Each structure stands twice: as structure tokens, then as C-alpha cells.
Length: 192
Image (cartoon, rainbow, N blue to C red; front, side, top):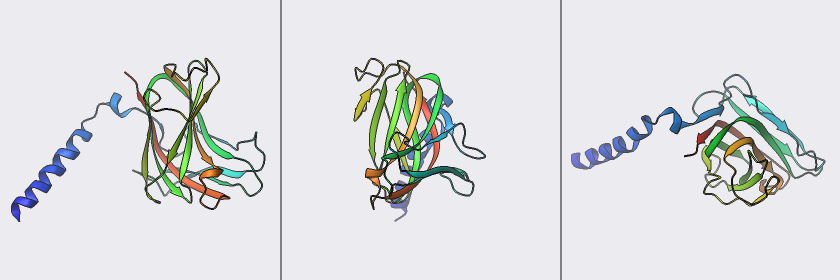
């Protein structure tokens, strides 16, 4: 019995320690922690498709690691396709986009990343952890986008990130008409 407890403790210690010693570069640049504002993120109502009634609002008493998250919500009864959080970022070689999401009546998200050549890549992310916080990771260097357009339109990531979109799409709403999610701890991890 004591040996079993020791093994569990040793495994737990080995699993946790490496995460605690990550360098600042490996952790990435925080672009959305929402402790006291929207951190430069703006709401986009998917205006090219009329009808969505949505919003992005800071929720001060909820969050992944600390109080403060943004709630992206939409109602699509009058039409439209999506709503989004968008943010221009300082150009940086991008390895990964990472963030945490807590779904409310949705089964997925779309993510758009625009590179330094103005090519936009759209990724589809399925949420499979129920209504609990889930970490999402997108790597434009290794993940295949669902679609791409603009710029060279060659489907090859052009180095630096310029714009990030986190989209709540109608097709991912469980009832087809409305959904929401909490988003927190958004960071860009540099590429090599």
C-alpha cells in the first residue's frame, strides 16, 4: 500500500515539475488574460451575414486561472453565421496559438489566423470536454486549416502572425440558434 502511494506521488511530481520551469519564451506572449479589460480584443458581429445578436463582455468573477474572462455570446434566430473576438497583434513568428475555453451550449469554434503576407487560415476546433475549461492549441506550422484565402493563397503559413480571430459559429450551437463560451489565458507561442 505504501509503495503504491509512493509511485503515485513520484509520477505526479515528475508530471508537474517540467511545466513549472518553462521559460518565458516557451510560455508565450499573453494577449488575453482579461483581469481588468478586454486586452485589445474587439467584437465582430459577422456583419457580412446580417442577423446575429451577440456580444463580447468581460466577466470579472470567472476565469481559468484567475478572475477575469471574456464571454462571447450569440443568438442566431434572425440569421447570420458567426460572431467573433478579433485582435491585431505585434508581428511575431508564430509557433502556436493557445487559449482556454469553457463552452456554454456549443460543440466547437472556428479560429482564423492572418499571416504577414495577408493570407488568412481558418481552423475548425471540436470541443469534447463537456462544459468544463478546455485548452485549445493551434499550430499554423503543423495543423491543416479547413480553408485559406488572401495574400499568396498558397496554404503555406507566411511566418509572422498579424491578426487572430476566435469565432463562435452558428453550426456549432447545440440548439442551432444560440450559444456562448468563456475565453481566457490567450497566448502566442513563438515559432522556431
